Image (cartoon, rainbow, N blue to C red; front, side):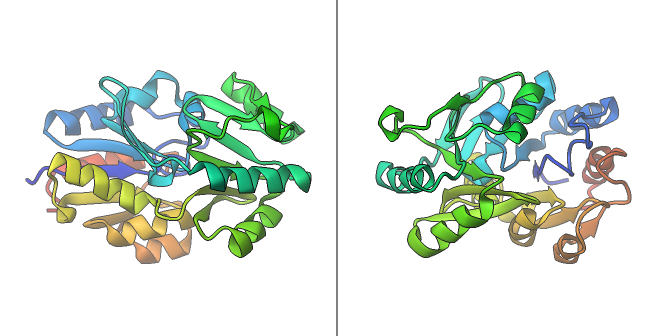
Length: 265
């Protein structure tokens, strides 16, 4: 049985709809780790978004966050890879959103900033237990070290501006009405490749698991692409294997069992 790097999307994939992971899934992860496999979460989430998982977020070996732009080693919580956005690009998109009264969210590690506060943002903040910092004056914003942006209520006009004026950025739909914005050389598939190369794991021994549009690329480029049962049809079509169970019924445990049996060798 070859050593595998298993990279699992979070929302709609590795966690249930209430953001929890079952004890059987956690136990299955630990069993696969003990057998020598490397387990990672790969997500559009930023550091602060991982708080919904509580301490369970550290049950894997690595976090591949920001849609592949940042990698954290869980055992010592060290950042081992981070593709930040250059200052000039940050200036352009933030100034545009402030000038046109568009909400933009941006992140630096656990720091979370917004150009406008609205009810949707505050509902999410209450769930996280963290309040974003309002930055509605450009002069008050530190442009150094910004790792990524997100747009929700104003995702359409923000996306159009990127399409028309900012080729150095790209974005992906992580859920309806939401776009994650990152450098144009950032992707989940690239994040998986970077980690696999660091660990000396061959491309054929990488496994990617997802459920949504922004997971298709990594499923196609991994050695094995897996779609969970609740995935969109387009994601299932891109996958090599579709689980019997969905994200609310231990799809993770199913996948771990198959890995341990050598299904994907």
